[in-house]
Length: 197
Ligand SMILES: [Zn+2]
Image (tube, rainbow, N blue to C red):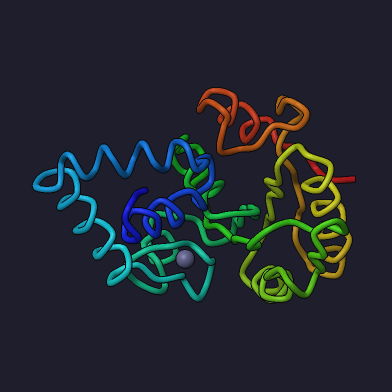
């Protein structure tokens, strides 16, 4: 029988995406064997994340300041807005370094199955941002059914705003999630983006 402390830590780690109970237990044992090195580093890193990271009030990015580093970067073109589902997608696109505008994180995707409705996402805030000072809104949803449903819905809502609405090119594999794509594929999808409708 493992101690209660180990059970609790294993339980907490096994809730992480991609980690089941088995790999969580392996990770715990690995950390215990390295309690003076890797465990200390992990504790420091977790403490830093908890203490320093916040959600940007403007775009939804995670950073140490709000507005975040991207929102306040004067080299970025505020007239271009790239809409993504999750912060991980923003980071994936930004790693490709081909989009020089700003971002808007929806906080998920519309899903009848999971009960995610338009009011659960930051769509109203997006419409406000798109209503002034924005020329182009790039819809960069995942190439999944729910991602595309979300893109359609937002494109319709944006018809009331004086902006050009584009979406990533069809180079995206069906079912493709941005976070898993290589930078070349992402770069091509951004470069070849096309008008919606
Ligand atoms: Zn921001």
